[in-house]
Length: 101
Image 1 (cartoon, one colour):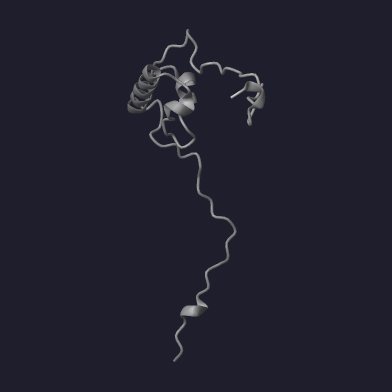
Image 2: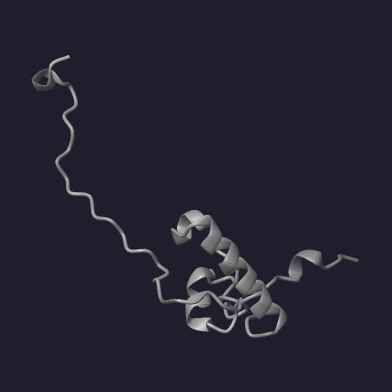
């Protein structure tokens, strides 16, 4: 098929390459809390490799460092910052359960 007769022409948008989240000078270690905290969700879960955009080797090192930091209680196992607060709900009615004599 001729290039000029394509049904769906290719887009000419420029591709912007993202910078890796771990620089060459960063050391993946359980003591490096500023680095480790970037790879943990708000709930305290370890984010996946696809979300982090790191290599397999880096993800393994990050996982080991997070688990070591949790064992040494530098990081919590669960992040309980999000407290469940009761919103203004309607009060429970007890009139439905009253017995008639």
